[in-house]
Figure 1 (cartoon, one colour):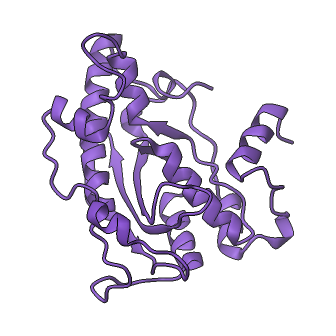
Figure 2 (cartoon, rainbow, N blue to C red):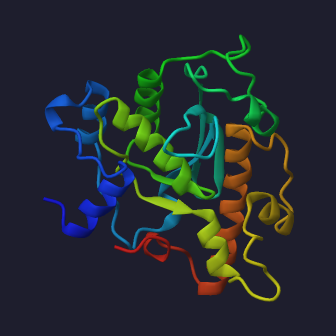
Length: 239
């Protein structure tokens, strides 16, 4: 049974609604949950842990109303970004939604034939199979995770169980806000500029995943120097 703190967190992620009963879970979500493995011990070298860098492009920034248009993900192990082992999927703009205002940001033309669209349950099932039990990393990742959780909720599933790490939080840990770093300078654009990361394919799901993955590796190198040693899982995830 979940303790009170974890139950409150999961309730917040589902918009305050009760969790979906286990007997209503879709088969694809049941497979994800039944196969979910706990995190390795905190002393596990970080180089041995596979993480998934995630980014979502959406119709807007209102988690209560807006919907996912595209999900992208890349797998990173140690210092290696696996460009071949990627996840990329698109959804059509749902009825009643006008995504035209966000096209100038992410460049996804609503319902264009250039994309292979799938329905939302198929996207969720494919993504859960891809992410498995891996740690999820992303920039301002709580928004992306909550958008996914609300999508899961619409299909009688519960939220993601994966451990999540925000590269913006890691950047603040290494260089706290102050005179030299204004509070607004933790955007992906600002950090890419600070760490000399090219902004190619910015505001596409896979493009932002790649930029975030490179940022992740650069931040880890700086954290290892700060801690004066090889990183272990416990340096980033507290038990």
